[in-house]
Length: 133
Image (cartoon, rainbow, N blue to C red):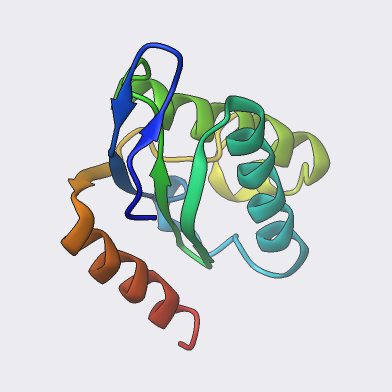
């Protein structure tokens, strides 16, 4: 996690802590929906060659700690995770639309913060500790 990564044209150490919620903060991310959401988020990261450092899907929010190359803006990263996951989850679990609104799953807002090597470990530990609650 603390290693400098590289692409063909850059060397970087960028980590983003991203948090977002379902619309109306509904507690819809439970059971099969939660496990499928985690799978989808991991598939997105793999397809984009991003590294998920830590991930926790809670009933009413998602914590994601991800490292991505600098060619991707933070807004683009969030857009990809939220857009693809919403589309997939709403197709696979149409009952979600009844709780969050037709054609929507996520609230439009999100939190994003950057972290360096020292604070990255603190964020990772925090997300992992959330799993026990």
